[in-house]
Structure formats: C-alpha cells, structure tokens
Image 1 (cartoon, rainbow, N blue to C red):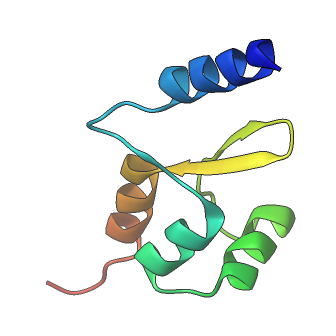
Image 2: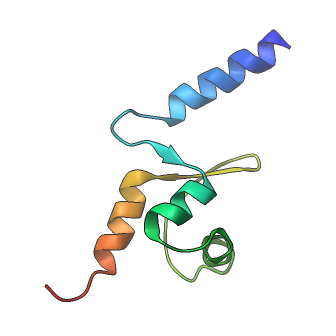
Image 3: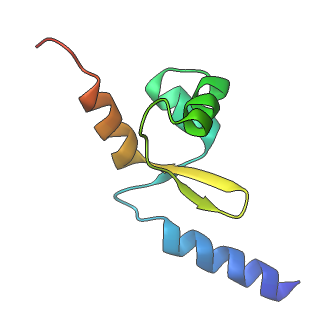
Length: 77
C-alpha cells in the first residue's frame, strides 16, 4: 500500500509545476466557463484542440493550455 501512495505522490509532483498547475475536468470547465460535459465532449470529438494530460483514466488540463485556448478564442479588442 505504501508503494502505491509513493508512486501517486511521485506522479503528482512530476505532473504539477507551481507555475503551471494541472486542473481536473470540473476545475478546467469552471475556469473557461463551460460545463464539465461540454469539455468532455470537446475532448472526445476533437471539437477544440485543448491539450490535456492523460495518465490511465486521469485527465488533467494545464492552466497554460486553458489560457492559450481562451486567447485563441478572444475576438475584438
């Protein structure tokens, strides 16, 4: 059991940089202002190219990727 916890902690520390945190799907959806279901659909059908990190069943979005998505979809000035 200790080995599982150690590997989870190691994975978490490898994937998360303090300057570029990883968001869960609900957190990412809230951050960009859509529902969780919408974000899941976009990811599955490739509607928008929002890069994500996937390890096993875990899906995480880097804050920088979400910020870049919002920048790409900002119109006007």
